[in-house]
Length: 186
Image (cartoon, rainbow, N blue to C red):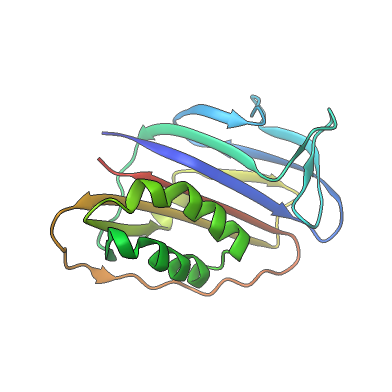
């Protein structure tokens, strides 16, 4: 079935103002991008150390946004079953474990929490290879550190036993690029 890649956001944090280009490369359809992702992606904008992105027309952005759709097979062999009312607390923990800053985690939670908190339970699995193998980011210059956090979940009425997922430590060094996104699996 078709899955939506919902609201992936890409932040760039160079050590000094740097001319960058980013292209989302996947075998699917980009349904919305902001600013506009042209055929060659987002080209020759200036990224600043605080994350501000300035495009050639002078407009400033805090991140690159895209969403798309295609058929994807997600891996739910490990993850977490979390009650709707505990979702905010869980996400704060899980996102910090994976290396998001408070601001990045806030923006993630503000988007996803309203969709999840009313469910009795959510089965949540953060995709690593299933996502990064499917969606490539072509980034110039090549970042020193790249973090891609991608959450998938589905709602259930009964608690599900699932083997817990573990996360590897992420260290921000040099030019760092961070992406987060997610999908509700129907």
